[in-house]
Length: 245
Ligand SMILES: [Zn+2]
Image (tube, rainbow, N blue to C red; front, side, top):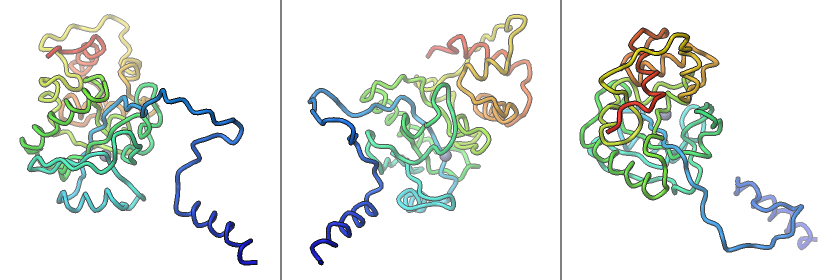
């Protein structure tokens, strides 16, 4: 009697303890090849913790916040210390719902970096220097394009605004990461459709004012819901490759 019940209990206990989905199809014969490697992230998403301390953020990233369980691959403290919480090849839970370009499950294709910052203060120089070193390491090891570095607010414009309008995107671009615009901004051609251009750049424009807020936060350091003439020139320049470091 007990012997019959045990396998059922064991199976139930194992399935409760393990949230991973099965990695092999029951429909197929398993005939393994040795020719494979880990899946490769294609994007890097930057966050601000919007908390008061790196220690507090670490606790949350190992457990949960008010919205449920969360994590990130890396946390960079204000003093520049870099902590890794999830292996690069694994899927951390940092992005949530959102879109960027053709991607709509950002957790599956990205690495998440949290910066210890309360969401209002300036970013510490030592923290940015560590971020630049980490970006160089990640882009080199995983062959991630150096411009493929975006804000959480870029991919979830209706929900998120981190890493805030104070994040130094121009400094990043000068070091070769992300995109920035040139000093000489050409006039877009007649008929230039800014909403279409935002979408081509990567933004989800289904809520256009939210997409414009994300764009102006990142490229103008302020949040607005309508593009001005300079914004349109910047957008046009970015679509043409932007500034080259
Ligand atoms: Zn975030």
